Length: 72
Figure 1 (cartoon, one colour):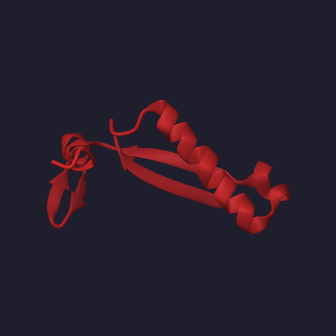
Figure 2 (figure 1 turned 90 degrees about the vertical axis):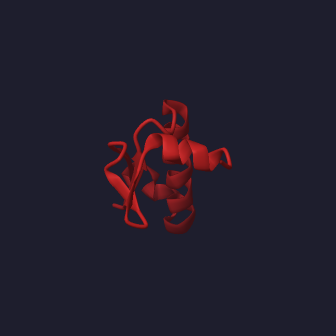
């Protein structure tokens, strides 16, 4: 039974967006492994505390991600 684990910085994605991740990642796995595996496919979306995620040697915050998404 497959397990897909996704880590995101807290406060970046809404509950609806996280639910969409679960749905679409499950669909992607089922496309590969077959429909019979849908009930056995697990997706975990785990939030990491803002500032506890490092990129390029620097802490990344919720605000940093939102600014990057906005093109700032």
